[in-house]
Image 1: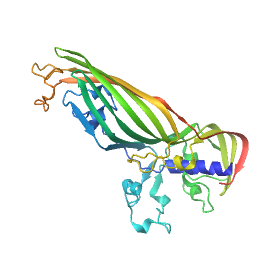
Image 2: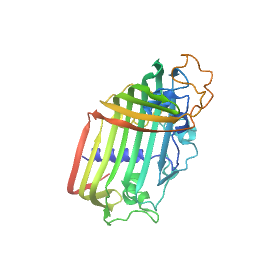
Image 3: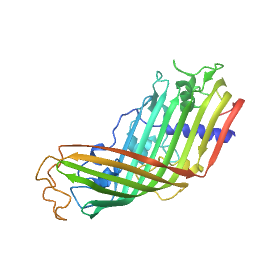
Image 4: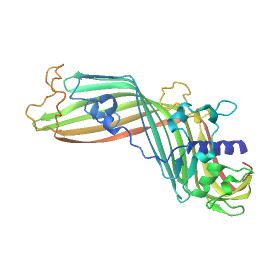
Length: 348
């Protein structure tokens, strides 16, 4: 049990190593007029493009993350850290990063931690028309991410600093105190990595006057590459000393695939990895898009097959769409534990 709890806390600590930044996904790229290879992921109706008959994508990537409690201040960027491209003076004897905890600064005033991270790597794919009104697409995409919700600042300090004889987590105005009971709020920490092998179908359902409507759907075969979850619905804890924590009325669950796959969900974030398959499932997207096209000379779906002379002209005055994406499930095999202890003490 001690080893399992230690792994869980280490995993939770690893999950929160990120920066307090606010970034956008590449929405402009995904919803552009010439990007069926990316637009299908937000709305499968975009599998059908009025601009070109054929699209081929070799590789592309995007990422977005945000949090409200942590600031990254290392002397090198997150991208350098992720790629292992940092100066030798920051490496330990084994050649790995000798991470300095001072590079991560906690906001002591935030009592409900939230963090969301997602990266996507678009692998080889093709989208093309099979009739003047119908288009299909197929390919592969890799997705990885993590999330933290509900962790209060006291429990966050435990995850962040752990227990040690130096008492780093006990110093400062927001440090923990020995012999004081702290509540464990309802929280959830998750990380996951999977591949999507997809097939999309889209078609024009109306092209009359100024009204143009298209619908689309995507089916996916999902390959789970690794996952982990740590959560709790309540309880309390106290520090008996710098090296011992006592949990009371703890109600917690944790799950992970095998150790190697669970700890590698966020490594090589923009690579297409085919090892460590831990589970499988199915997914689906569905969507539609309406375009208002008042121009009389606009290109219609029944124009000559390879005629793209007016592709630089924006055919619609305005448009709107709606989609329901990322429906599905992945069934994993792994270790699942329910911890429901009235009183337990661990040396961590």
